Length: 148
Image (cartoon, rainbow, N blue to C red; front, side):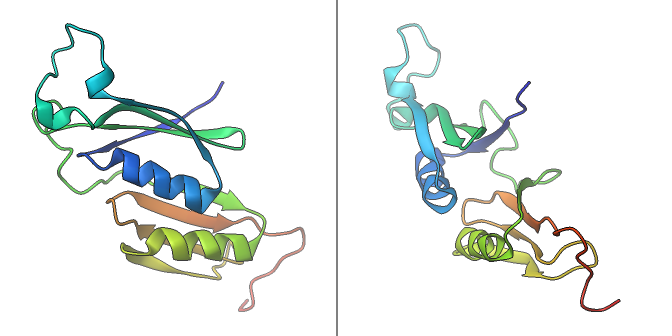
């Protein structure tokens, strides 16, 4: 089984996934615009021609899926995303810091990347596309927090 998070955007799916591919070292393996849909699809307005109805990003054995939606099809797509985070785990604190720094560029930090009682490096942010992320460093065996 593979559980994949699907992210919704309003015309920024391609830019977001190109950004994620660069930051995470992944590859976009599918990017299907509404303009390439088969005849008879209900979404025919020219303004959606370049919006993506499906995008797939492979990162190692993991993936993210995405699409562009408008408020007529997804009434809350224009509201802040809440109730979930895309979470990245790594055993390398420097890698976690790099992901955090790059993903937060143009966005906003919710919790700065730093040591916690459970991790040598953890942080949360909302990226420039409005997607919430958590970055977590998995502690090595025997790790103890500096304070404690």
